[in-house]
Length: 606
Image (tube, rainbow, N blue to C red; front, side, top):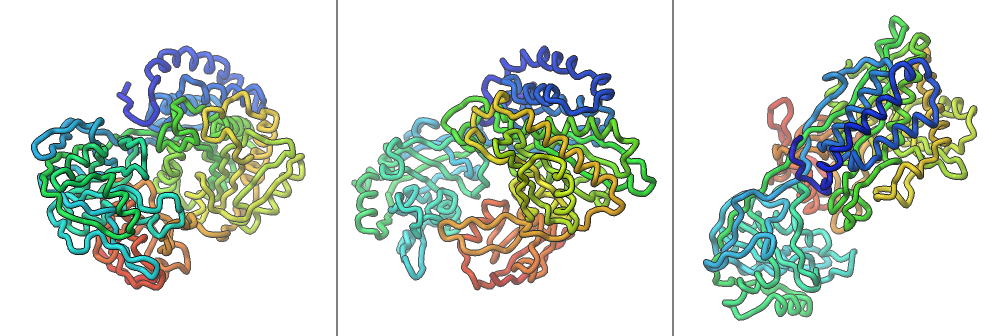
């Protein structure tokens, strides 16, 4: 078993010891003879799938872990038992992802010849570049260079940080005001990138008492992009060692900056030497894919995707997406999204048993790494296992296990085809659902990856609840009767889609990108759906271009890789966001892209 060095994955080794027995029990209770001869979707079988997938043995199905792999194997085995044909590599479409970041063996920090201790006195920041630097230190206040109608503040005025360490306070002088003009330039990454552009060869960050009274060091667990220079965080006592020759302290400087609201930068006349050594932790996860072939000589070459993501948050922790990040305990994910996977499996059994009466073909997919940014569905959309033109509809099941007293079922994407709304209403007429329909195709789940590629989608969910992304999302809280009815409804919808004379006609219904966040100084957008998974450091791919928006008007195309904005490099999603935060509505910028291995410059007005 691989060593697991990622957020919240303790107790896996102990749990795996019990996995073989539990897996065997579930396998025996769902043998192929029963599955293929009894296509009825039952409460008992839905419960069986959910109890296994949400069991403590799988420890929250965090991508790349043993629990993740065993969940995928369980799903694949069930699909094969139900008579489906496994695709890709025996049903598993594998792909790599960055699961975290960890410190290497070569980190060190010396202040005026005295070494301090990693993890106690300092830590490299998770977005630090790897490198070695021995240089003088300049105190740069909060590290701001702000010049707009509301605020002028330049911590770099009158000082030269070229080739030196830039020491600065984290946060800003108005920490209790979320609408402060300091909000965006006050982030650690923004400050570090900006210092590097000012010529600093390294950055030292420290938390003032007003920013963090406990003076805790950041955890090195979650990958957050990379700045090209070493970036470290030191404790206040460590910072005071650097400031001591000048006769000042961090506490005095923070109070003065907050009181006077103006820069106070100076050379510290001390030398600091450091090596930063961080390792990217990569792992492998997978999509589980199997097919059912239709019988119409022509329509059998058209596919309907029925999918649900099977990954979850592991044992939580900071950066995992848990709504209780301070609690390290396994997150069962019974509703999110063992419920969707259970329904997908039972629908697969039903369709397989009825395959002689189905005209079109089906792909049944359990997506990996949805919680990491729709990585599995994006990977399948980019690397389809069938002719991409044959994909005609996608049904996404995500959190469908908590149907409430008013029997509400939310169905999104019904406007992504001209026939979608009427078809859903026709099928729903036979059920006692309170169906809430949404036209828009975009949404925070795997169907977005297919809507962006002009494929009609349906997104079924019973919605969020107080247990969402917490350890309390357990199997005993699932409404199994409601889940059974939703599964039957989805099966009926799938049969209707499979036997129509003509496939659905795609139409655009709402934006195909996530709305731009509205906080801090973020004012502009190119109008693209970026590849959130890009971590290779070679640019940011545009997964979709919104028609009529700035990138589209300038001629950007899907698949273009953005490598620079106004001559400044763009290596990943984090640096892309940093570049946009420095721009204003109406600016005319040049964007360097790579298309078909050739570099081009696009002129874009925001």
